[in-house]
Image (cartoon, rainbow, N blue to C red; front, side, top):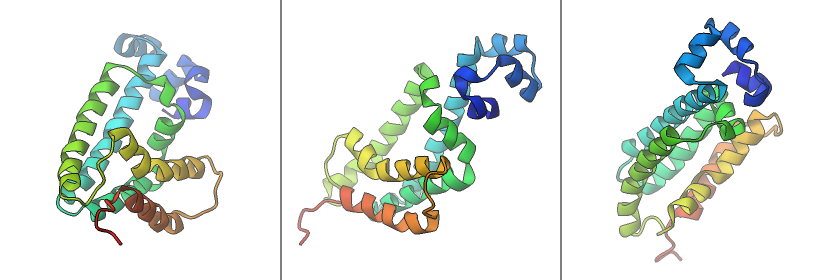
Length: 181
């Protein structure tokens, strides 16, 4: 991952990757097929770690939509900026390197669980009835862009300052306005 982060997937030399990993070129090709297969495996590992973190938040707040929405934004920021910044950089900046069946399966399972959590809250009127792509964009779009800027060194806004505003924006965009005055 370090070689990919330093030089990009295309620019990382297989010899450098092997040197850093203490692996032979032959073993990389044997286990991953090629450099793209290795990048895909790193991507899948990073994505699975992120998704587990996000789903843990939803499981921890099954009955309170507002608390869960806000907590998920906070967990997203924490994962990207404090707990796993290298994995976040890889997902955010090298994501085109990895596509395929493993990513599709992870996403299918992840979004199915998110929907299982979402639908009851939408039925009882706490959350809006929205297409899943809009849910993702409204829930994490602003936080994702903030993380991208922060990890690239393009904003000086501290996470502690950004966190409440981003969580509030997510809640305001996802909450149902039925009966709201």
